[in-house]
Amino acid sequence: QGQLVESGGGLVQAGESLTLSCAASGLSISDYNMDWIRQAPGKQRELVARSSADGYIYHMQGRFSISRDNAKNTVNLQMSMLKPEDTAVYSCAAQSRFSAAAEYDYRGQGTQVIVSS
Image 1 (cartoon, rainbow, N blue to C red):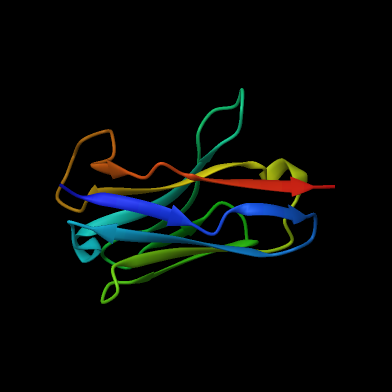
Image 2 (cartoon, rainbow, N blue to C red):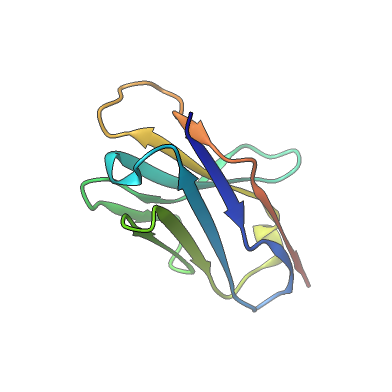
């Protein structure tokens, strides 16, 4: 059974940077589209960044940068110029490149990011 474990969250000041990491086990991320998603209390889930298995990259804003290391089975999210509105639980999620399902195959428990003003 596959598992995704996030790390790197914490409390930062507005304007600072933070890098989140996602370690995968039981699956090879080279076969998966990897997303970073976030959810703040009372708000809908948002797609922050995507790294697809075929090389497509998406970032919701230029302050975010996703990168993957297929050899290490890890995916990182670099965040810069953080704002209080970036406060949320950030989760790593994986969907098989061969899947047509609406939901993710795997999703981590998430890591809390709090940005103080």
